[in-house]
Amino acid sequence: MAGHKYNLTKGVDYHEVFAAAPNQNTMRMMQGMTVGMGLHRKSWDIKLAYCWSELPEDQKIALKYPKGYERYDPVTGEPLYMILARNCYGVPNAGKIWADDRNKFMMEHFNQNGWRCHQCVYDPCLFYLQRGVYETPRSKQDPDFRVGVDPDPGVHYSEQKRPAAEEAWVLIHTDDCDAIGTSKAIIDDIYKAHDTKWAAKVVDSDFMLGIKRIRERHDGMDKITMSMTAFVDGMVKSFEDHLPKTNPDTPFPAKKWLYKTDATAEESKEVLELGYQRIVGMLLWAARGTYPECATGLHQLTRVMCNPSRDAWKCALHMVNWMRVNRSRGIVFSDKGNPHPIVFSDASNKPDDTDGKSQYGVVTMWYGGPVATVSKKLPHVGLSAFHNEYMALRYATAHAVWLRQLLQETGWGFAVTEPTPLMGDNIAANQLVAEDFITTRNQYIYLAYHYVKEVYAMGWIKPYYIPSEFNLADLLTKPVPREVIRELYDQFTGYRPGWWKTITEMKRKAK
Image (cartoon, rainbow, N blue to C red; front, top):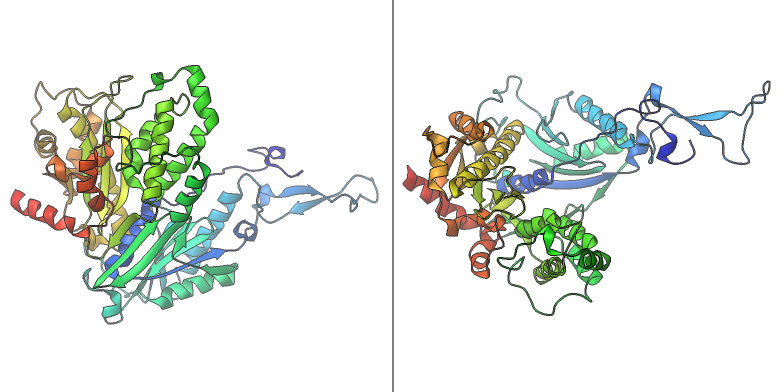
């Protein structure tokens, strides 16, 4: 091996390379879990993680001796080689080898001596651990299954008697372990096991992958605020010479739409040289972390990534300026927020002139904050507002199904004992989920979109009408004016956690 991956051949020197990475939505879900049950936190880093794993027997690597230390066969005079037995950084499948080794240890070590460990199906980087479980626990199929604990999400563990079983959830970002637990003891012991097996170092739980997660408890509220102030400051500094002096009051210029055909080749070349792709890349990372309200505008900025206009450049700077103004804000999860997930769905009826497809948006709210958000174009052309809205409900349903199943397999089935509300502002689309009124005016809808009917029949979702002015997903379907931002922004980002009580009242009236 001469020091780079091109000296290794797939199928000869190594095989598969895929290693799962955590879903960012899972990390946000864990913030809701933490405040919802008053859990303890601990984070640590595994030092030089890749190097702890043994290479598979059929994938060991031949290495040349360093210059000046060469060795030769005493009989034939042929050069001799060393054998690399352990994994190392730079090997194409190093990540997979480490992940397989790490996961094997988790499942073996924590499934004995009173421990139980489950590697989640819906995010294989999340591990659910229990210690001191009952010999004959209730079935995990029970909707309120939670070993040894009465399902009372309104009472912190710190205020309850010590439960019969301790629980912990560990999300592993390659070698960064982010843990929460019902006691300090259980997460301390998980850390000690990692430190003994490998070598680990405790890090501040207030920071993970560039995201600040400040936990505050006062006035009877437990909340976690996620922000990216340092990253935003660095982004602003990178483009400060181009930023406008005015402070924007929307994440993206209101009612502004970008198209690939807007720019000439000369104009596009000029904008690319200014750093358009770099600025959009930085905005994407910030939006995925703590600025979900920027998702709609970013979808437009990425549409023209290879052929941006000067307008697109100005829009990108506008968004940087928005993040500068809101540099210390982000998203908030609070124990005063909704203890049961609520999904909002919406779709625009303004098709893209280039392909006829409209924008849709979905946001899943839990404990007051946005666990998952999406703003994309629908894969198919909609023939009406009703058609677009019904297609959007299919994607909202998928998000609800993912979160429900992940909560169930991590002992949080009590949070989804009832159908998850799907809040949409199109009455006809909502009705089609529950009723089979297939007519000549809607018989053209592709079969795959009727997936929502199947999930509804299972009792997992239930559509409810919500006026557009209260629909949080409205922020994800179009560049909205400042009046809409003022009305929905604090609710959307978790700074006004009591909004869900209005939804509860709407549901009560709907019954």
